Image (cartoon, rainbow, N blue to C red; front, top):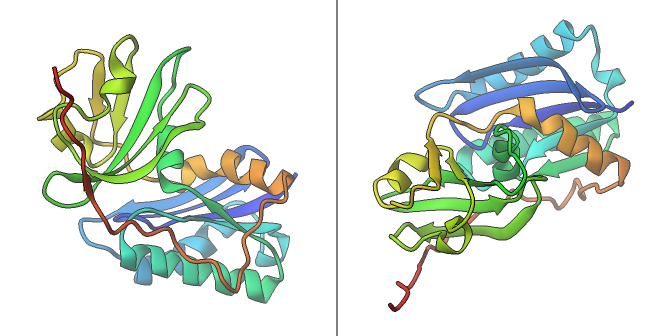
Length: 225
């Protein structure tokens, strides 16, 4: 089975894991109040490898959480991942940050997860996932209003998770919404996603890969009664 180094730096959580197939075999992370990736990332990489009794030469690929998220955090993670891939001559895999977050929720049949990262004011980065953690609505940068996600919540339980959940809770009133603002992106959930992409040979071009930034926010129109 492939051994993959997973890096998550899209938010304040500096997170590194080693996965073997679908299993996470070591994890190092610290969710500090301020970004500490430049100081901690490479230390965590070495510690995670040591805990797994592995060396850099044992790695089959590097997976990077591609965003959306902090510009600075993403740049640090991508730069480190590219450097390792170049030096070790191994492939680069990208994992959507919001998809990794969705994997932290155990979904029953019919239930959905909406990953939301706080941006500014009432703005969030968001994406909707089904019970198989497949994207059913694309990632957007949007301003939360009363009708946000109304198309998904009428007849099912919907988990709204991530740092943007608190501002969503203040606006979204449907009883089928369940909010968890404590979930943060973590490398602990990246392994199965990265392994699936490794098996399918869904690799990034190391020279040209860029993080996924979202700049423009859109205001959803309120539905007419």
